[in-house]
Image 1: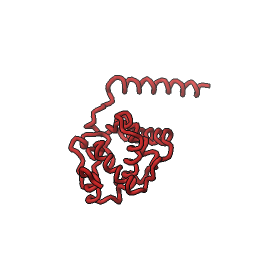
Image 2 (image 1 turned 60 degrees about the horizontal axis):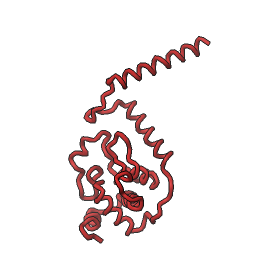
Image 3 (image 1 turned 45 degrees about the vertical axis):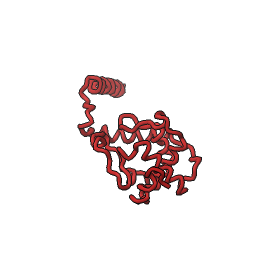
Image 4 (image 1 turned 120 degrees about the vertical axis):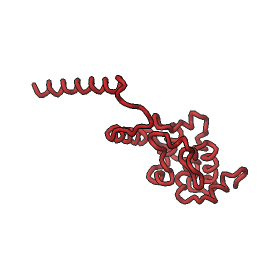
Amino acid sequence: MRLLAFIGALGIVVAIAAGVFFFGGFFNVAASEEDNPVVKWALIRVRTAAINRHAGGTSPVKLDDPAVIQNGARAFAKAGCANCHGAPGVEWAKFSEGLNPDPPDLKESAAGYEPANIFWVIKNGIRMTGMPSFGKAGVADNDIWQITAFIKALPKVSEADYKSWTAAGGQ
């Protein structure tokens, strides 16, 4: 019984200490500071679990259709995605260097994600990362699915293809 009382009291002390730490302003929210490794680990796990839980559905478009991928490249460019994530032959905008966490290089990271998860992230955004909700910004679901197709194809997209697809009137 004493052990349970000790565990309960310890839990209360830890909760109070965490409250003082976070609500007392001791946790530094500056984007210029690196996250504590434990906080970084926890945020990644929470983000991954939330995306896996909430993402779902199937694409109404064929994600490997070249026309869908090209339309996705145009929608990606129009939505300003290259500003933070770059694109073939397009450098990231300077301001994206100040985001914390850094925006992922989609050419490298997208392969590990299911299309439904990519769609969900684009549509809903991710709090406290700089990733906005494009659904809330008025981007149609069909366009988001096309951007998803482009992101999945990104490792195989050349600079010349991206440039031709996103040029005014590009085919």
